[in-house]
Image 1 (cartoon, rainbow, N blue to C red):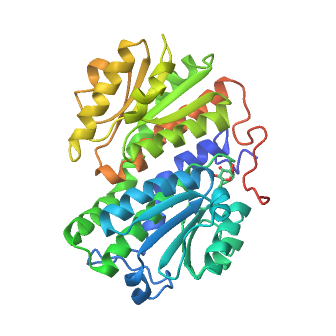
Image 2: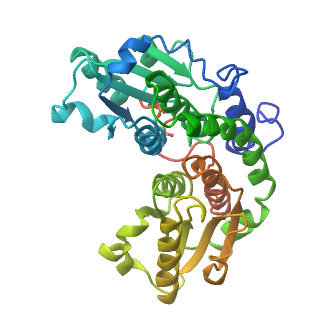
Length: 372
Ligand code: G6P
């Protein structure tokens, strides 16, 4: 009913709007007054976490994209090697697992069969499994050694939005917690990131306030057949997620590419007027990546692409090459997906509406897939 949708036309719009709160709720009670993490609910003894020599993340769909982003954070902050794998591929390739492997299973519903089978396989090999899940008491947390719940609240729309942002927050918390428990040399950086994380909900709020031009742009693209997405570093999984949202909701051909791979193939796809969304890393921090992606934008624009550039406020270098510019607040590089994903969700939702599609119940999809 309309009341359930809180006055929004679709659950998806309501859930997109709830993201600042979902992000804040997922942090609530997990950072103490001294700025340290208190994740007592992660019932894996610190002694065991100190011995972990490999992290393996398994998930499906949007949760898999959260896992791809988590890899950057985990490896950077903890120096523990981290692999991310589609749950459906994982157990069939005889993965190398042992008691020092920490497996993280990410699932909104906690009922995805592929993810469940992957974690069962991992536990049979003696690995510990930590679930990141949004549904209390669901099967995946029940069968895991520990669980960190995302506090997104119920997500009804099939296409995941607020659950994704909270999965990212939970992944950052796990990465930082591993760093804290293991006393990595990034102590100061970890504290700074925890501070930045506690401000991120406000940044997501600000993105939501500036989405009208994104909706207008989406409506002008309703008759297109293809949209490409490019990103680098953590912007690459964001590009994949932007493309997935467009497939799910707008039923358009959409693909995400690592911008550095353009020259190895995808650039052949660029033609006159092809919309290409580019997620631009911060010009601060890893500025090499920023400069490289600016050249990528120039290259595709010279070949006729219509460039839709998602870039940090104050990033002036992109302005001459952006046919459309979507501004996001400045954040530390690793946290940028929390703000960069939001315009892509809005974009896909509006395109779906413009194409007359069922936003909350896209054809052929289920919210939770309980068969393999
Ligand atoms: C289905 C949904 C996706 C979701 C995926 C994983 O395919 O349509 O939106 O990302 O399952 O779901 P989970 O509940 O495990 O996060």
